[in-house]
Image (cartoon, rainbow, N blue to C red; front, top):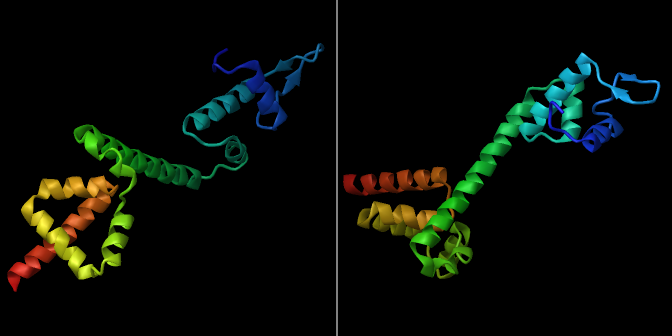
Length: 170
């Protein structure tokens, strides 16, 4: 078949009202017109972008560009999550002894731990300042270890560098 779909998939699409054949033969076989084939092309394209069948059904009757914006946001979130996982795996591969710790520490857990022993926000900021001054690469590695995204890491490092510059100006 042109689209690589099984007969059961076409039957399912028919059952849920996604793609109904325009014609039937005398023996009750389904016949698809050129318009049906064009609809099937759209369905296949939309499926490749990860859009669900119910949403595809809605798109075929009333195209909505916000679907693509929503899907792009969802994909970006998935990519960011995969990048975090990738960084954690790379960190584990670089330092196998940290494998068990990877699930114990997150940025939120680390912050709560420091707060539980009495650290203030300012002291946590000073911690990052000292780590950044000591070794920017180690600071980045530490933040990745805590599961921060590249964007969150960059934001924290920028804030830390601003704090360093302000302390130097005083």
